[in-house]
Length: 475
Image 1 (tube, rainbow, N blue to C red):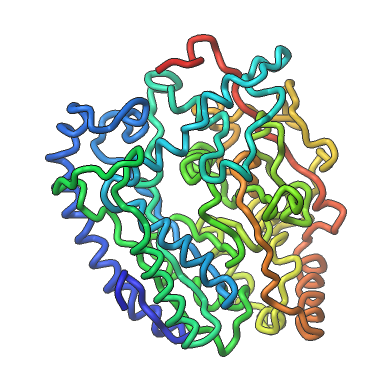
Image 2: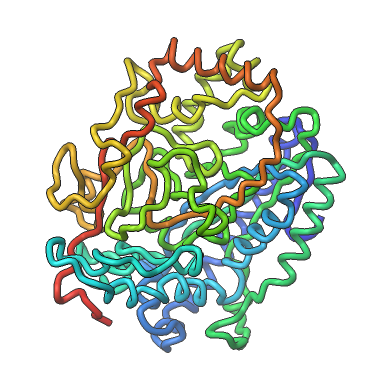
């Protein structure tokens, strides 16, 4: 198939066989890119080809290239979700071709001035602490947050670090589960069609000249489409296909349902927070498909928070449909499951309940003892000016604070929402309902996972740093 798409049957053997070939190709591309960029990037920056504040966001001191974070995005796709997923794949593929990464980086921070200059809350000293007039429904991938906007202007401060351009520094690949062989072929064709329609080299609305450097493909996105018609249950396929051999070389595995619109996410802001906090498990917050259907998720602790000062929370659950895990955390969790015959039987029947509580318990407590509820109730999720063990931490790029916020268990990023259009593509039959009950009995009875009441609680909140006068509008 063209466009880097491979079709496979639903067996682990097929996947294991294609990994070495993909890795050889990827290593060759990195070698060529490194050699060419070492020659061209320095002159490109000094010539002012990267405009405004974004020039400082592209690199860290002492290195010509940003370090890469590798993510495998795993998605089940029903026929009704084909267009959404194909558009998302084409969008991500566009990051690495030509100079589109420059325009995307500019767009991700294009509304920062509006956020930082909004109503000032005197008590907090943070711009934007009052009325949040920016709407994630209207702005989508351009919806900003405080950490992103402060880091935009953060040159020599806070340890002298630069924010990386995550449209280049994060290398994403896809593993997609199609409902049939024909559906897999249709999905592949839709991805090719959507990819061809993306303007790869637009910058500020105009077509840029294509130098040899600009034409270079910085990362070839692998798109592996697997026919899972033998058993289309998503958790079963995660366990069956997201295996050590397939995840070799990746930092994160990101499980995203087919009715989540990845293009709605501010990619730069999301991965900037990931780089600062380095959580074991994390997710974007969730909004619905419109302001009238704004919830997007049953769990109030995982919903977008309108107060822009609330950046993140360490929670007791990270929902199935949009969670990203460190590969090492996922593989530890998977190993626990595959050694339990009854658990695997329930998963094969479509059991899902309590699965997304168990991994939070593992990440925080190594699945030892009882999972604890957080001290903050969902109704009390609000900006807390005082910081401490049971209130909040400041989230900022600073050596003095990062030790307190890094490596948390399950983190939701409240100011980088994803849109959930809720296709409800699966009908839960009686067998799946019983299998889900069986999973909960295992996790709660044998592994100490928290009861339902504890899922409406938060361990700790992470808030925006106070903006000093020297930081404001410093360009």
